[in-house]
Length: 385
Ligand SMILES: NC(=O)c1ccc[n+]([C@@H]2O[C@H](COP(=O)([O-])OP(=O)(O)OC[C@H]3O[C@@H](n4cnc5c(N)ncnc54)[C@H](OP(=O)(O)O)[C@@H]3O)[C@@H](O)[C@H]2O)c1
Image (cartoon, rainbow, N blue to C red; front, side, top):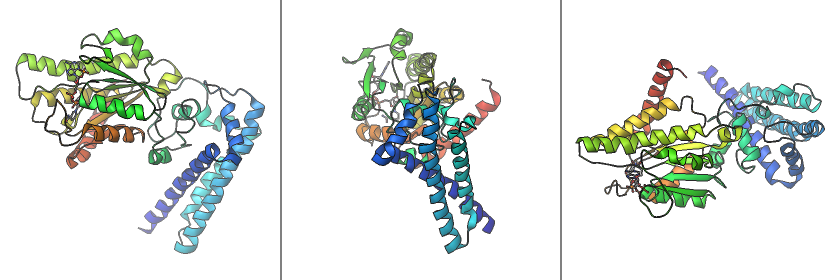
C-alpha cells in the first residue's frame, strides 16, 4: 500500500510538471513580458515545421524553452518539498528529474546539439492525425498554424481538455448533413457561435447545398474545402419491417454515411489536412441501447461498427456522437432539447472527446465505452491495415 502511494506521488509529480509547463506556455501568449520570446519561437517555423532561421532557433531555445524548463524545475521542487516535508513522501523528486531532462535538452539545443529531441517540431509527413492524449506533431501543428490561442499542451493535452482549448472551431469550415432537422439546425447555430463558417447539407431544405443518397460523390470538390464534416442525417421507420423500410433505413442511416466518410477520407492529402480535418458521425445510443425501433437499431449498429473498424487507420480524427432521446421529427417523445444537446456536443468536442456521449440513460455511459473498446480490440486483432 505504501509503495502504491509512493508510486502515485511520483506519477502525479510528472503530471504536475506538465501542468506548469502548459501554464508557462499560456503565459507566453497572454503575459506581455514573455510574449516576445514566445513569439520568436512561433516565427522560426514554416508550415512544414522546417526551421527558417537557425540563429533565431537557438535564441528561442535559450529564451523560451530553457526558462520554461527552469520554471518546471522550480515548481517541481516546491511540490516535492511540500510532499517530503509534510507527508514524508519523497516521490515528487521524479517530477524534478523529469523537468530537469527538458532543461538539459533545451540548453543543448540552444547550442545546436541534440536537435532530434525537439519531438513536436520535426519536419516531414505526419504519420498520424492529432493524438487524443499525447501531443504529437499534428496536434502541435494546430497550435502553430491553426489557432495560437488554443492547443497549449506541450506533452499531454490535459490542460486543453480542462480549458476547452483542445479543438478550436474559429474560422473552420464545417459542413453538416440533415441540416433542416432538429439536431442539424441546433448544431449549425452552436458552430456559428464558436466562429465556424457553416455549410448546411440538405436533402430537402430550401437553404444549403442539396444532396441525395447515392449521389454523395457529386460533392467531392466541396469536401476538399471542408475542415469538419458532421454526418448527422438519419431516418426512423419505427415499427416497419417491410423491404422498403429495410432499404430506407440502411441506405440513409448506414450506407450513405459510410460513403460520405470514405469520400472525405479521400480528400486528405497534406499535413494540413491530417492535422485539421475531422469527421463527426451522429450514430445514436441505439448502438448499445434499445430504441424500440428494430431497423433503426440495426442500421445504426451497422454504421457504428463500420466506424469503429475504419477509424483504426483513418487519416483524420473521427468522432462518434452518441445521443440519447431529444425532441425532433424523428423522435417526438425525446426528453432533451436539441439546443442543449448541440451545446453539450460542441463543448465535449472542444475537449477533444472522441466518443461524445450525451444522454439521460446512465447505462449508455457504461455500456458504450465497453462495447467500443471490445469491438475495437477485436477488429484490431482480426483485421489488417
Ligand atoms: N432525436 C433523437 O432522440 C436522436 C437520438 C439519437 C440520435 N439521433 C440522431 O440524430 C440525427 C438527427 O436526427 P434528429 O433527431 O434531429 O431528426 P430530424 O429532425 O428528423 O432530422 C433528421 C434529418 O435527416 C435528414 N434526412 C431524413 N431523411 C433523409 C434522407 N432520405 N436522405 C437524406 N437525409 C435525410 C433530413 O434533413 P434534410 O432534409 O436537411 O436532409 C432530416 O431533417 C439522426 O442521425 C438521428 O438518428 C437522434
